Structure formats: C-alpha cells, structure tokens
Image (cartoon, rainbow, N blue to C red; front, side, top):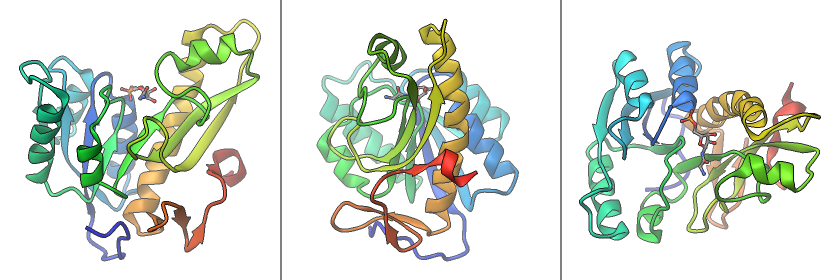
Length: 225
Ligand code: GAR
C-alpha cells in the first residue's frame, strides 16, 4: 500500500484504536460529524472491554470491536490477531488514540506511512509514560502534545504537528494533563484531515511532507492560528 494517497474524493476508511476514555476519538467523531474530515471511521477497536471510548463510538453509530490482550501468549500473537481484525475493515489510516500497548515491528511495518499516534508531550521530550509529571519534575516551562507517524521506535516516529501549553505556577500533573488534552483535541483532527485529503504523507525517506513540502520541523499549532 503506498503511503501517498491520491485525493479520490471518497472518504478515507479509518480505524481508531483505544484503551480508555476516548476523548481524542470523540474529537475525531465530532470533526467527522461536522463534515470536517474526508474520513469514515469504520471501526473502533479497544483492548479493554470497559473502555469508555467504546460507548462514545456506539453512540455515534460506529462499529466497535474488543480484542483483549488477555489470553494471548505473547505480543506477536496479539498483534497478528489485531492486524487480521483491522484487515477486515481495510483502513487507509490507523489512528492510535490512547491505545496503551507497545506494538511489534511486524505490526507497525504493515501500516507504514498510514498509522498515527498522539503523545502527550513535545516529542522528542518525554517519550513513554507519566509525561506530565516528568515535565513538571524537569522544570519545563512549556509542555504539549505531538501527532506523529508510527515507526518501530516507541514514540519516535516523524512528527506532524505539535501544540504547546505553558506550565503554570501551582500546576500538578492532572491540571497540566487537562490543559494538554484540550490541545490534543485540536491537533488530532487536523492531522487526520490533512492525511485524508491527501495533503499529508510520509515519503520514501521517512520525511513528513505537507502540501508537497518536506517539513523540517513539526507544524506548530500556534503558528497556524
Ligand atoms: C491522551 O492524553 C493521549 O495522548 C495519551 O493517552 C491519552 C488518551 O486519552 N496517549 C499516550 O500516552 C500514548 N503514549 P483519551 O482516551 O481521552 O483520548
């Protein structure tokens, strides 16, 4: 599957993977319902049956699937089953929206150039977990979120767009997380919109290309508005 998508005028089939609340999923659903995405969220998959995001999907009339990681002997078997499941929906884009699992290189390779993740930090700062607490402990004066193409490197793929927020006096991890999350809800629909309309792609050298120009750095939301 080529990573470049010609603008065909048909909505891009999208699969969204979640593990929890699904507020980023909700932002995508809202954008789709507002006619802002040339995308069709065909399925929402969760590895947890109790993920609230499944309720959000059902309320929007989107098919849901639960594929619990329990019962699989290893990561490779789970990821193979997940790839099979996704294959039934033929997604042109896989959107990781709080999907809290590390993916095998084989799975990632199967969706090269057509899988996004959102991470709650200004990557390459603070990959991994507990990003808000770590930003506070590092004394960062700004923090934020990043949408990036997924590669084998955890939270390390080429970044598309970032949103920044200030770290304010008196912040704790929860307050900071809420400020970041509000920005996540702005940048994820934007990145999906660009990809779905054919404006955004990953080129053969692993560079992000937006409107036919390679990005030397991720787009900054504050410079768009
Ligand atoms: C979001 O903050 C997202 O950036 C983060 O999980 C949260 C999911 O919230 N993802 C990661 O930490 C992945 N490394 P949501 O379920 O409300 O969209």
